[in-house]
View 1: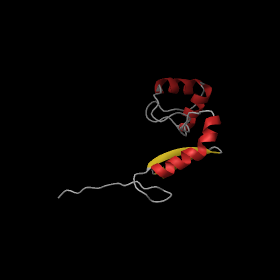
View 2: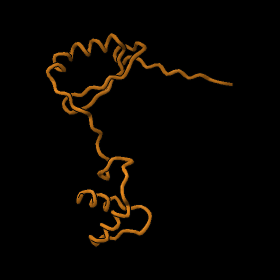
View 3: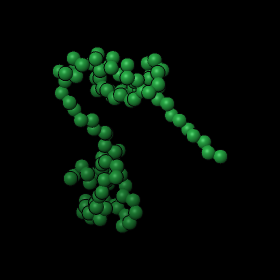
View 4: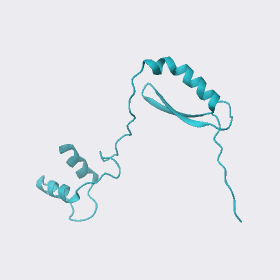
Length: 108
């Protein structure tokens, strides 16, 4: 037996269907809200004077806790060699501790 699942995004203001997610920011905080066409137009109109006078800023995601972006390629052999030169204890194989990774990244 097959089943069909439908996801209907509704407007967060009035519950109408056909909403799309809108992302905006105020005072350093980024917000997201689902709005249908009518309420999206109201928001766009209300913000138009401010958007017209503002500067565009590209959104940056916070860096990973270890100080590097997730999935970034690193030369682990180079990091191990650097750690040994610094007198730090590092294993020959396997995971390199986050403390050593942070120290390496801070020095480069």
